[in-house]
Image (cartoon, rainbow, N blue to C red; front, side):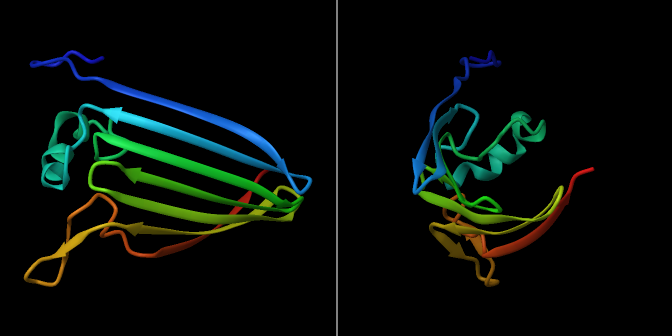
Length: 151
């Protein structure tokens, strides 16, 4: 609970996680629900939330008031791990999906490949620019590669 000039603001997160054995390998699943009273109740409030004191201080993990996250990680091979992160805004509704894979390519070196993709409503302005109708709807397909080296 956070005191503000007005009513107190409630912020909370609750989650569960569990590891399972699947085909002799580890499957890890985590699910979380988050409520943030500083978040937007709908897309029409996104701009004011971004410009708010909490938004300007970088205190927001997501823009919406109610969000859920799912993480699934599977060790498909001793050198390969595949995973999925999905974050959902429960009020608009929209989802950011982020599947990926990490491959060990040598001692202390790994290669990570993944994508981000938003699913949800969006509108188009007169200039042909997407306008948020949901938190994650306008997010395009973005791929990435990362080489990690530890020493």
